[in-house]
Length: 83
Image (cartoon, rainbow, N blue to C red; front, side, top):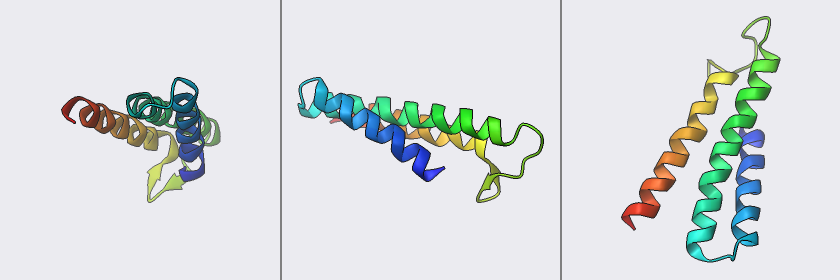
């Protein structure tokens, strides 16, 4: 799960750099990256666990760990808004 989430965060960081590199652009890029990472974890986790829930992260089926990306994206939005 962690490498897949890191892939999404990397995509978001790249987007932030491509769209100006300002602090706001990088923050928005990271929020998008958390959402992309969550989506990647969801798709891969669902594909791996289509028959049984054998692929787990700390006891949680991998497809449910995608909510961590959503939670981190919401935290990022809160940081952007209240900064």
